[in-house]
Amino acid sequence: MSDQDAAQKSQAGTVGTLTTEQEARLATLTTSTGNLRDTAKQAFKGNDVKLHDEFQVGINKPTGLAAVLQRARIQLASAQKADNAAALQGKGWIAADTTALSDAITALDSTDNVQEDAKTDATGGTDARNRTANGLYDRLLTIQNAANLQWPASAAGNAVLRAKFRIGLFPPPRAAGAGKPPTPPPAPTPP
Amino acid sequence: MSDPLNFNFPLPLLLQEGDAIVTAAETNSAALPTG
Image 1 (cartoon, rainbow over the protein chains, first blue to last red):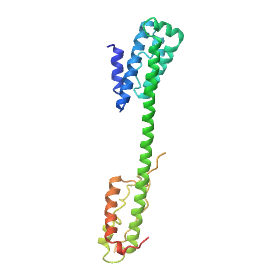
Image 2 (image 1 turned 180 degrees about the vertical axis):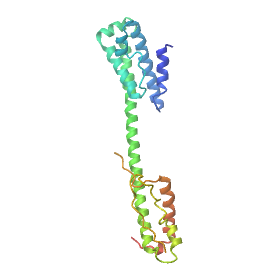
Image 3 (image 1 turned 60 degrees about the vertical axis):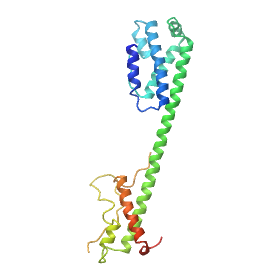
Image 4 (image 1 turned 135 degrees about the vertical axis):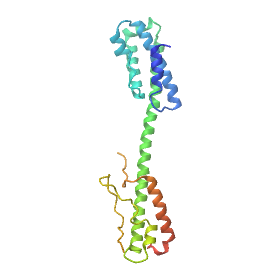
């Protein structure tokens, strides 16, 4: 295993939380890009700028899936250049290998989109949760307001019942300068 | 942009206090106005 392969395998482990399917497709892709880099090193020996710019030799970061895909696309475009393709073929990288790399990119890209969609869904889930929580909060304030009107603090003997409705206790007192102020609850009046 | 919460305390507290308030309302519902 070359140093490049080792770096890529390490890289594959740091792209975040991936599904099993993504891990498999990422492994396929990194194998293909690793082979292309190794082939390019032989085909363009000494041309460090070309190896770096076109075949991403020595570039392992950032490690996110999108960045991995972006580097793979740069390598693919380089392999598809006619003059590069001829040199690569002389070292064993044939057209079928370029096609396989293209397919590996497409396969991983599709799961990356799925992951992005899932993120969107998760955000939608947060929205729904917040709306539900806000609705519950409003209803609790309504109940407290009704209880406050029914059992005012000014009347004797209501303290226990008011405490059961958490009047004056909930919502909790807000720390100074902390975020958006909640709708104030009915304020208890000392007897 | 996601919907913000209209309060600034933890959700578990909302659920805990909400449970107490609803329990109080159920216990004393006869005295509360219907709406």
